[in-house]
Image: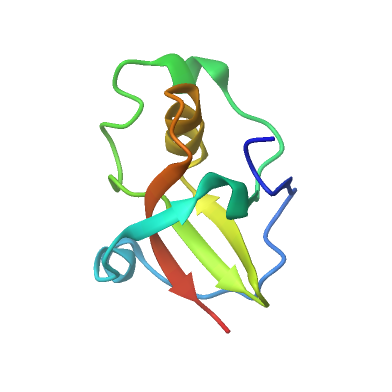
Length: 97
């Protein structure tokens, strides 16, 4: 299994972070196997597009809440990493604990 679990939605409270707020969090490594996704479905066209990682933050956004790390944004990047046989991802991690 690539991820710890596949979720559907964000079980953690609203954090109100903007793109600028996320940019202030330094990226760090996290194992893909520690992540729970917040989306059940993925647009394959977006995943395979050459510019799929061009727009937005270079690093996925992860929210750590009650001991679990939720992949809030960046599912395409995480899956791309897995397809390249990588087990670790660099992400911005917001700790809401």
